[in-house]
Image (cartoon, rainbow, N blue to C red; front, side, top):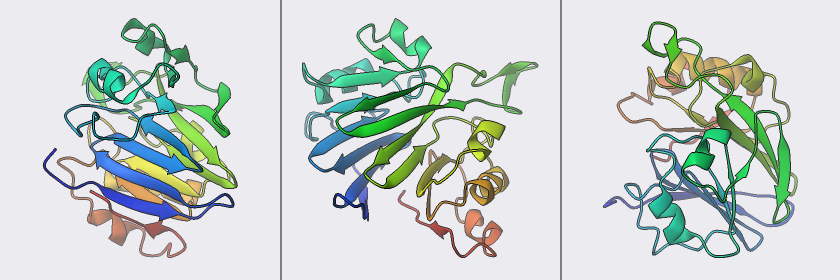
Length: 223
């Protein structure tokens, strides 16, 4: 928590969307008076000092994504929490979105996208993130669609998404994607802006060379 988190601005029809990269998979979005926290974890930030959440999104129930203490610190009585089905075991007051379901909160449309491993296995036949359990989320801020992928590889469901303006994609093998996998996903999604995240122990600089022939995708490293 000693590092200073980086914030980036993405213009929308209703004012700038400010995205703060708090560390690892923890993100904060500020837009049109609304504050959204994604995967708040106390190891990444002092949530007692951050703006309170109108909405909290949890991608899955692993400790580095779901931290009840951080959620309690940044939440209020009116905060809405949206999470994957397994997350209800730790946060019984959360609203479940299953893969493919959608919701709306605070003027933001939210779509739950499957997040899972195809090749990354903790044991033979046992993926780190099984299909059907974790979520990524597409959030629509006015006219801008932002995809936060969660812990996933370059799945068919990800690559079928359309009209993504900004993609926040993980790059950390074997749990998520290699630079090559991420580049493959980016070529399918064709976002205007690509933010690699969840990049501990990974040489993120390799990605720029892999996408050198796709100049329409602007890569912004914020870790």
